[in-house]
Structures are given as C-alpha cells and as structure tokens.
Length: 282
Ligand SMILES: Nc1ncnc2c1ncn2[C@@H]1O[C@H](COP(=O)(O)OP(=O)(O)O)[C@@H](O)[C@H]1O
Ligand SMILES: [Mg+2]
Image (cartoon, rainbow, N blue to C red; front, side, top):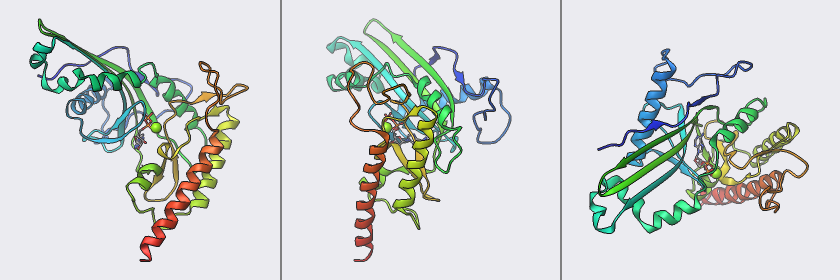
C-alpha cells in the first residue's frame, strides 16, 4: 500500500517573486495547467520514484537526483529522512519497501546524510547564478518543497520526510561520470576552452559575491551536444564575506578555493583526453 505524501509547507515557487521574470515549470504537453495541478503531478512522480528507486541521475554526499518519466525537462534533487520503528519480531509487518530503512546500515548512512541542509538556500544560489550571462549555465531552479508521510499501527511506526528541489534536467554528464564510466567526450571538445570558460564564470560569480565552495569533477557537467560546461550543486555555497572559504561552524578553511577546484578538473580532463586519444589510436 503506497503511502500518501502530504506537503509540509507551501511550496516555494521561484516565479512568485514580483520583481523577476521567472519561467514556470515546463509541462511536457506545453498546456497551461494550474499551479495546483502541476504540483499534484510533481508529488505523484516523486512518490513513484521514492517507491521504486528507479530513474536515478546521480547521487552525491547529501542527495539523490531523479528524473520523472513524464517530463524530460525536469529533475528532482531529493534529501530523504526515513525512520522506521518496529520490534525485531514485528519487522515482517512493515511494508516491504520500508524494511530496508530499518537496517543498521541504513541508520548509519542516515546519520551521515545531513538532514539540516536547506534546499531552499540552494535554490536561492542557483537563482543568483542563473542571472550571470555566460556560456556556462546552471540548472534553472523551479520549486522547492517538503513532503511528509507517516503510518502507525500496533506493530510499527514509519516517518518519511523528503525535501525536494525541482530543477531543469541538464542534457549533460558530470566530468566525474565521464571519466569513471569512460564516456566519449563530445566531438571537438577542448579541455583548454572548457576550463577557461569555467574560470571566467567563477570570476563573474565572485564579482557578485557568490562562492561555490564545492568545485569538483562531480559538480561540473559537460553538455554532450555542445561540449559547454554547466556548474551544479550549490549545496555548500555562500554569499561572500571577508573569508568566503572559511566554515562558520568549524572555523576551518575549505580544502580548496573555486579556482583550485577548476585547476583539478582541468588536470583530470587532460589526463582523460590523453588516455582516450591513446585508446582511439590503438
Ligand atoms: N540538473 C541536473 N541535471 C542532470 N543531472 C544532475 C542535475 N543535478 C545533479 N545531477 C546529477 O546528480 C549528481 C548529484 O547531484 P548534486 O547536486 O551534486 O548532489 P549532492 O549535493 O548530493 O552532491 C550530480 O553529480 C549529477 O551527476
Ligand atoms: Mg555534488
């Protein structure tokens, strides 16, 4: 029996702010639907992949990213917190799709995954970065919402909470996936041009006071048609103050600056393209 997810808070639509011209969430059929209808559809497709675990685009330290089957233009970044309480002898009564959440392994993983991360902040950073007019782009942020579902019986209690950032699905693959899965770079791809573009983009970001703070191969994607870069994952970003790379809580400096992050991506890509060329010539 599928659980019903309820919205915890009113969802945050990025097109609601008056001063800006935002696109609304693209619908597949391009028909004008009311916000409520589109929101219902989204909750439905989020429920589907939460149950099935299918359609995963990627996974990082905090979140899973999924795409809905019904809309090629969207993806969902999801942070999930599931708690299952059942006495060991009653575990069989827990619905099967929730049993894995009762394992110690999952509970350990849950502790590592930071539930406090706010996807609304990430939406704001994307919103600021999207205004930079440049070859490099970030995914268009559409909406942030929080859903909750729970079930209680004599045998068990389940609480399932999810935070979702609905954004543009990029026609791209992360530099990390390209290298790890040995995917062919697009025709005419130039590492020098790619890195130069990233550098000029982060300069423009810094001019606006925006620091990405997690520039790494897993957070930069390559457009598989054009070879242009995208920057994703603003989950650790900050609007700059005097020491933008210093962590407020730990007082430690991040291992590297955005510039150093690009240097390391460039190095990885250089090695990889040499390797690919060597393979091609064999
Ligand atoms: N807008 C997007 N379009 C396509 N794939 C994406 C998109 N956003 C993220 N991904 C994929 O999902 C992975 C994890 O997303 P990310 O935002 O980096 O999550 P985390 O904060 O957990 O690291 C990325 O490395 C990338 O492969
Ligand atoms: Mg990431």
